[in-house]
Image (cartoon, rainbow, N blue to C red; front, side):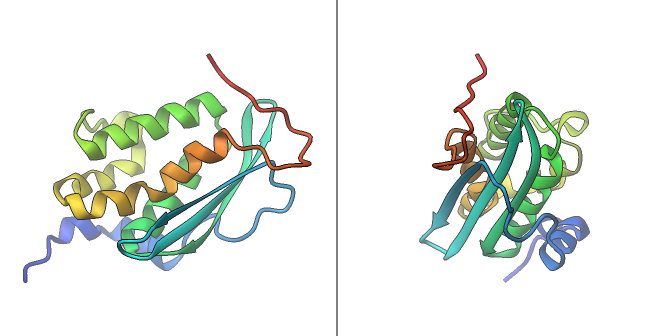
Length: 153
């Protein structure tokens, strides 16, 4: 069996070994979980949204290298961003992996290193799991967080 090494670039392996923003988020205002029963990947994404900005983001869970690295890289990309920017990035990244958008290194930054996943249909769900959880978290304020659901037109 041949392994395409560019699927596991150094940056992906580094994020798997030492995921950024991993662990619980005290004071989270939004949260969602994602599960891929086919391979056992499971992540939860927690956000602290203040004035339509992602003041902080953390994730927890377990999964393959692609899942964990993609979610870790996602947290770095959205931390401090507006919720609208995070949602746009989520849609664009999903488009790149599903073939409906062209990879754009200037827009995606380090996330471009995951574009090769698009050549492996069975791994696309792994790479997108944290991103799907992000999309749901943006729409799911925690009960009692006194945080109104924010929508950007």
